[in-house]
Length: 410
Image (cartoon, rainbow, N blue to C red; front, side, top):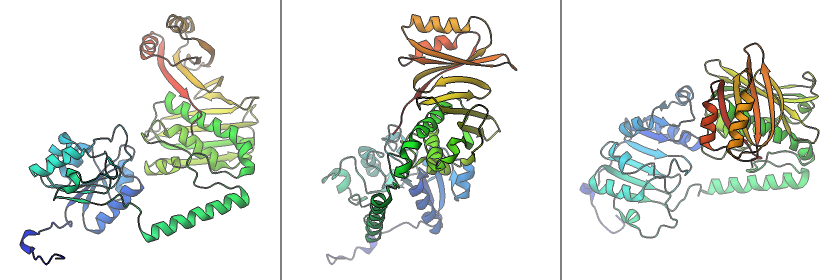
């Protein structure tokens, strides 16, 4: 029209009403897109390995396997980070499984779609059109995908609106003022949001909470439906949110491919349909003047818990795992073993580790007399090779052997 052309017969669109939108990644942005699509009277199917079907149904989204989404969707949009698992997620193989004439949109991260595969799909007619706001290399230049007549492209505009820019500027100014006036830190991406005067007191507890989360997340196979975090004694006198969020970050790192920290962990738990319960009591638990307990409850009722306190030097110390009472330092590489309470098991494990040249700096164990089962934590000076782990697992009396790595996190 700007050039004086009237090509009405050459231009024909497609209605969105009654069509099916496939949303890959049901985080904050994915859910917003799904909500907008329902406003256009579209059906929405979604794929997200960390969301429950119940939570998706609450959002008006039918949760389906990725293969089903490819087969059913008339249009597909991705809202995931670029990871090893999502790189090239849409490629020649996945495009072949889609409806003929499917519409593809990527406003998330360049590289999730294989650009060369998109061109082949467009040229063959398998893909009806593509919309791209992000590219593998930015700026992309005048590439084949940019020049293609069936591709609509924008220069990574994302949040480039007047309202969004104003909102971000105001929020940043407010956070800087709060820090300068009171030392308060909010919306930090690499540290818990805590007042300056509490940082030195909270620091050891944050390390403890993270270590407990990391331990139970790796040592137990439970996928939690409910997470309970209790601070008792001195721990209950401190701000609870940083302790809770840091424990979640340590735990949920096992379940998510994206980096998990104390800022995004509560949101990831909520998105995954996980209920987080917080309990506080200033009363001591047994002999411990301060104690943090992390409990996981699965959808089928299966339950596990881990408790820890601070050693005299302020470092994290495990004092209970399930029914096993023990005293173990939580740091570095740990071999966790559960076995029938029979003579010779410790010697067998020690012999296997010694033969493999793996030094043991300490070993702590606990006993559940009711079922004649023992648990031991072996602190190792190096990572445990898979072949050695399998040899330990092959020992007759051993019911569980797994490596656990406790790190300081972000």
